[in-house]
Length: 411
Image 1: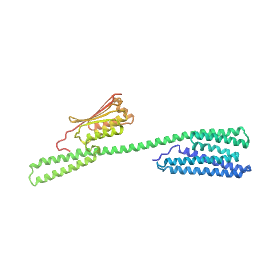
Image 2 (image 1 turned 45 degrees about the vertical axis):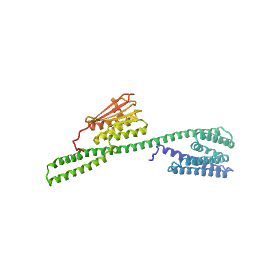
Image 3 (image 1 turned 90 degrees about the vertical axis):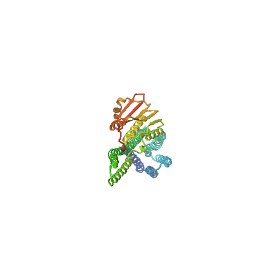
Image 4 (image 1 turned 90 degrees about the horizontal axis):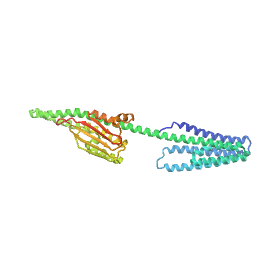
């Protein structure tokens, strides 16, 4: 996923401006030598062309390296960075030497020190860049003094140029760091949004599968079970050949009921293949291994409807996530107990606790709907959710769901 900084046009404009300034000054120095009929005009032209050629060579090499580096692997990253650093140091050193020769041949060559300041700040480390600017400024002042005599303008000009270059260079670095940080945050935000969207799609699919399983269980499976019971009850009073047809119809209903139950099993969460107690045990083991926070699970092996198992597993997952992320708990207990026509799930932690009376409102304002989702799951199954918590006293979440007794032979 590629992100583009809003400051990219600014950086592009600065680079183009630097290229234009350096090339324009180089052309001016060479043309000026011929205009004033300098005896060193030919040498100035040669040095100027060499300066421009070396500069363009380095600029194109840096552009090609940045393009190739975008697709480089991690293993070649360190070696490539060292090679680019070595090339850049050699390039700026050669460029400085040619500039020094140009300044020695023509005083106008001192003008090129200003774009060189920015190259020093860009290529060299912060201290090295400042040192290079100071040395090149002193050299330019001395060269101008030898050519034109030491005057106030020949000293103040390079000094002012150095100060302006330092100010612009440090501002550029600050903008560059801010742009990099912004790109990192944007990339992280996009990654988080994509992960959240994937999670929401997965949760939506799981919820829809659970709903379909519940609907099939409560309609088709129950109907087939009732048909099977009625046919079994009618068989003793039937006479042949009617008894054979009843027996065949009952066996067909039994086969269809088995197929329906298989469909329900395939639609329900994989974690519940071997029951809610085992799923809670695996959940506790996974969280303990991942977070190093002890999660103790005590769960009775109960025969529960699939919608109840799914709801309790999701409630346990949400409560466990809240305890780990927000409560700063050091121990967490999960208990599953069967009651008279009901099942009780309790999640306790010894964390910092919170004001339970405002839990849902605060959770909603903060953008977290964990407790609200638990309440909705419990409400859909006509159950009750109780939250007991005090600041500094830990938290206990109790989810109690009623169980409707099924007739014998029900799915």
